[in-house]
Length: 75
Image (cartoon, rainbow, N blue to C red):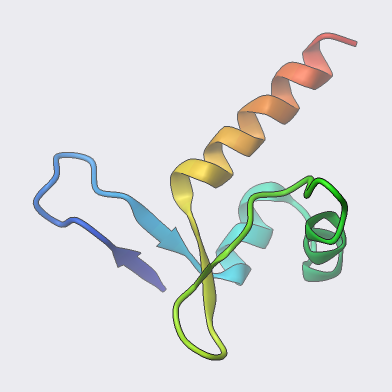
């Protein structure tokens, strides 16, 4: 499920649900939520869509991936 927050923008922000986040980052739900539980969190915090639904801005997930790539390249 992809939700666009500003459809008139040239590059609208997409909101990603957990299955797409898992696919993009290569981690499962348990690992994502474990990293969210750290202090400070080691993964972008989700946005609450409703009482039982959360999503992540695609730009935050993309930025997290880029940081991980850069950290891996520096080793």
